[in-house]
Amino acid sequence: MEILGITGTELIGYLASLAVLISFTMKDLKNLRMINAVGCLLFVLYGFLMPTLRVGLPIIITNFAILGINIYHLTARKKEGI
Image (cartoon, rainbow, N blue to C red; front, side):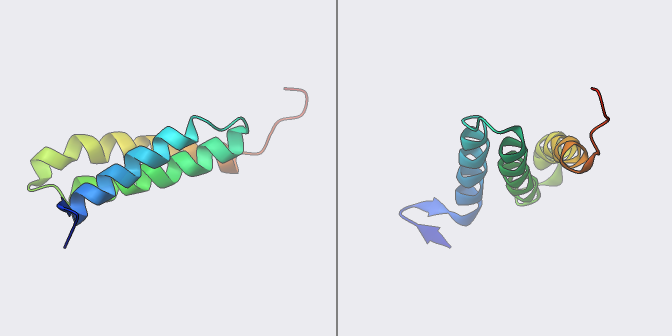
């Protein structure tokens, strides 16, 4: 699939980059983490779409870890007084 000379894999990479970029414009930390998590998910998908797993693995590992951190902070209960 190609749109304006951009492959589907490239499009996913660009969307992932855009989501991460937009997340850092958020003032609300919850919104930042949610949008950043979407970007991370797209980057994990992008990593799996690389020509070989060897090429995509650093992208997958890094963004899967960041996704886990985002999920942890989005679901962790806030301690009173902290």
